[in-house]
Image 1 (cartoon, helix red, strand yellow):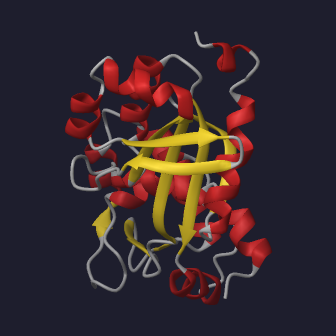
Image 2 (cartoon, rainbow, N blue to C red):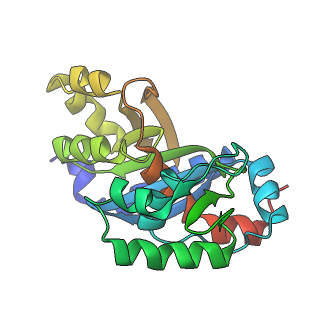
Length: 234
C-alpha cells in the first residue's frame, strides 16, 4: 500500500464522485443495497416524459419489490390490446414465486393502478410510461482491492447501464502495471481516477459489452421514485 493510501478511507472517495455525478444531473444514492451486497454509489438520469405520464395515470406510489417487477414483466401492456390469464403468469414465474404470492402481489398491483382486468382472471399492465430512467450508473470505490472492485462492478452490470470502479489516482499505475486493463475492457467496465476533489474518467465504460437485466434495472430505478416525485421532475 502506498503511503498516500494509508491515511485515506474509502469514504474519502465518495464525496468527489458523488459531486461529479450530481454535476452531470444525476440523482445519486449511497450504499445501494442489492441481492449480492452494497454498491457504493448508484446514479439515475430521470426520464421526465415517462415520469409525467405515470403521474398523469395516478400511479404516485412506488411499485415495491423486485417480485412485482417480475410479475409486470410477463404481463402485456394495455396499449398492446392483449391480456394474459393469471394461471399463465403463475406458470411463467413458477421457478421464482409461488402462486399464492403472485396472487397477493397482483391484488396489490390492481389496487395501486398498475394492472387492470379486462375480463375475469385476465390481466393487463398499465405501464405505457416505462421507463422512468434514461440511464443507471453504478460505481464501486476501492483504495486497493482492485480485483474485488472489478468483481463487484461486473455484478453491478446486472442492473446498471454503465459500471465503473473508482480508485485513488496513485493506484491507476498499479492498475496498468498488473495488467487489469484487458479484463476491464473485455467486460466494458469504466475506471475513475480520484485525486482530492478531482475526478477523471481514465477508461470509458461500454454499454454494449453487457446489457442489464430489465427487471433488475427497472427495480433499481424504482428505488429513486420517492426522490423523483419529491423533486417534481420537469
